Image 1 (cartoon, rainbow, N blue to C red):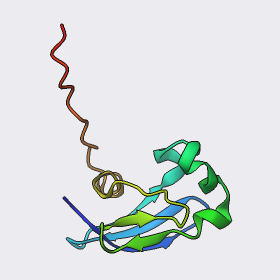
Image 2 (image 1 turned 60 degrees about the vertical axis):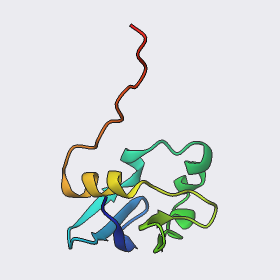
Image 3 (image 1 turned 90 degrees about the vertical axis):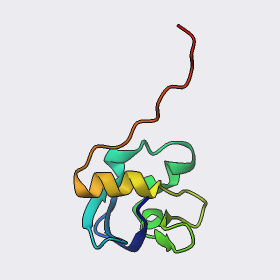
Image 4 (image 1 turned 180 degrees about the vertical axis):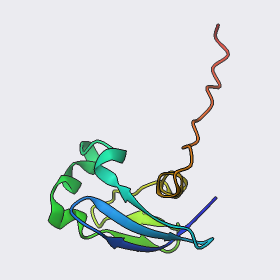
Length: 92
């Protein structure tokens, strides 16, 4: 699993990221998630700009509790396919 080591806000809803393996890229969070529920406040550029590195978890977080999966961020930033959770339901 990759970890975010640096984060900066590029514009109103885009993050510039550096990862533990040296990979770099940008992520347009507005295209990644809906700004609803916990992510709703991120619609406001001022709130979005409060993005910070959570060094303990290796990801990006905001003071109101929203955070993003570092593996998804890595895939989006580097152009790799985002892993999809396998369905474990055995019902036919």
